[in-house]
Image (cartoon, rainbow over all chains, first blue to last red):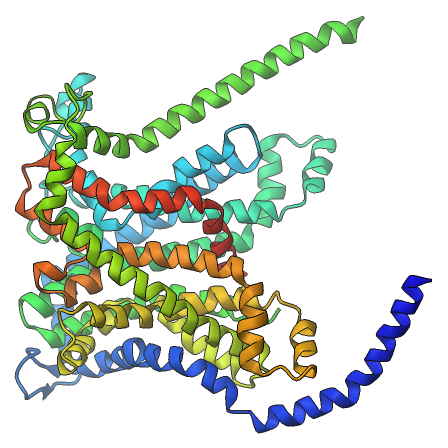
Length: 316
Length: 283
């Protein structure tokens, strides 16, 4: 009875809604500028600080300029041509970015998935392990760089000490000063920090998979590996796409950790496009070349970002 | 009979499996945490101990002075700069992005999708793409080497992520609630701060934490736009500290720990919000 009267009152109020909402709509029409008012503070500061500089960088990359003098010389695509044909370090940086990107797409992503699979089921202490494995992700890359620089220290560092302790002295080396390999210790350090995010995203993705599917597969006689290949992984497709996109974008943003660990050295062997852009612009006053590198880095990022943005703005 | 016999055997193999599982996880966790453990041990050693035994041994005696010395040698200054920047940037940023996200979700805004796409660009643009024009702009406004200048940049760069998280949450608020308030004659501003924002409190807390950590850790903008030692924030100051005192590892480690402790506390107390916030980012 009570529910009935509630229903009745609801439907009564429904009737009232119709004319009222019409007047609301009329009022909204008068206030069409209001959303813009809500958006204005964020949009203005974002446009001034991010969008305008971005566009202006593209424009500046067409000039020969030292960043200080009042005259800029328009040179068209000369800066780009110079980079690709005369700038050896640019090629080193481009190659390093490619190596970094490929490793980043495999290593932190698969480790994140592995940890997530291990820690998805709730067992005693699972949240402690989650915290431990996620923790490096909250540290600043400058701090991560410093910590790992000590680990790689040739005499006092943990890595060489451990190698000596287990009789592998032949493998010890000056990790960050060896031009042949210096990039890889830096990537390992970055990986330590980069695993947390994929893990978190995969944990969230795993939560959305209904338990019944696993039960059904179990009943059909599927082992754990089969269940992963045929049930879990296909259902994580969307998560995997997001993880790959974000990891790739982040990998191309790498800067602080290289700055903290090697500063591009030895002999520019660990330069990335981001660090080389900094050197050219702020140390060598080659602003034209620097902005051209920034544009190239931006274009590379767009390869991964366009599908990602499409996905984020999809209609739901 | 048969079943009764099989049962204990089963539970035995099961508990062995559980033990192996835990042992494997514990070993993995220990290896994973080695850099942090090394850092802590180093920060507690005296310089001689470190020089002789390196990082890979327990400290002979605990030396707390490393912390006070690191604090007095400059970390104090960097620390308070980071506190100022973070505590101004985060609240101001949250207000701006919440208002924007509200306009994009509940205000019948025709341009919502296009504006959101425009804002998302900022999420992927490499910061290098903005540095040179920003240097010119900050120079013209006399904001180079000032904390307010840096805060303005942080607020601008925080807009895309913040709008994305808040928009993701506002979308889950039923339109009916907003419409009901409209019919009752509530103004949009009142709806925003009396209804939408309180409902979005979990998202606001998540964003505060993610944004706070990101601001605390930011390096490149600070590096480009802060020039004098007295203005440096922590990450920048630590790298500087390292290049200046690169042999005093124990003090350096103490300095790094001081920088990390606030993050650890936030992480321990608000852990679930990290997950919630990132969930919002994917939705």
